[in-house]
Length: 145
Picture 1 (cartoon, rainbow, N blue to C red):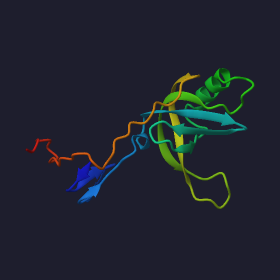
Picture 2: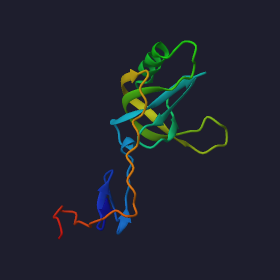
Picture 3: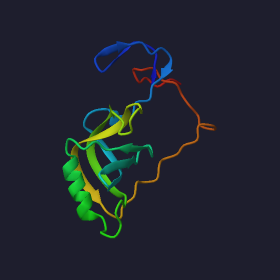
């Protein structure tokens, strides 16, 4: 969205004049998240369907429910097999597991919903930027001719 006046973000007044602001929905608490979850050797990660980004998964919140479901659903002869999951979660900064490395973006599972073996992330919707007609609209939503 295009912001041309001060706005409130997380309770703070921020001036973003003329800045294109893109916010990842998973960064907000309790947001629906889908992805390909993997767990092996006490390391959990997820490839987010929305962005393709690979993130570590924190072993807190509702992680144990996700871990149990994953271990029951994955084929016994395929440890580390990615499986499609749906959950409520948030992305936050956590210390890196490697010494001397900066904090990493990490998914925290707030509520595990379901696991679907055999399902993959849907194909991303792609629209070209060139050759597309764009129309600027004021923030109040009035359509301009």
